[in-house]
Image (cartoon, rainbow, N blue to C red):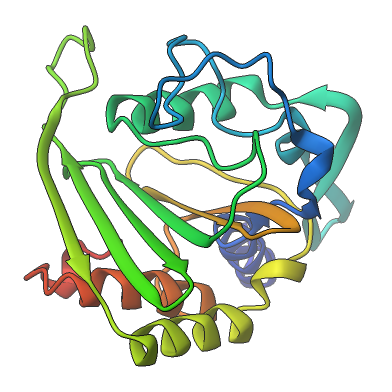
Length: 241
């Protein structure tokens, strides 16, 4: 493989690895009173997805040879099909953390939830809520799943932290800089070793979810990383993958 092809492939792979998937819609579209939940709005059905189907369309990715020196990656959204495996994979961790659904009914607050799933470290979720002049972070950690995959771990740590209006404003500024509510629809990629960074946002009118595979810099990374910093976690930079 010559140098030109290697360079193009490297650029294509990096683009794929950092692509996001998601879009926002008026939240009323997703209201579903038939979903069975407890008094915390946690689904009582283990198979209940945590996201609307439309949020995870199936994306087909192909390597296309343009000529002898150029190969590109081409992605195509397949209308009417959904990435069920992806959605169910993310959902099972949120269910194990006993997290509430964010899309199924009208709320009187604004919420952002960052779910962090790393290959070699414990799953975590950071839920930042604003209601009137109250700002609260809910932080949870799951234990490491057993090596046979018989379970995905149990809640090992649950902390609640009261935060300030200043911290909320700084976070929402980072969210705005990441263009979270308008992030383009694209392909959510995977690998053997890495992580999924999943961010949800909901307010009185809109709901949105995006996911990125192993981001290492950029506005989206900075917004998620700020939530990590608010909990004063001593996580080495090399583990922020």
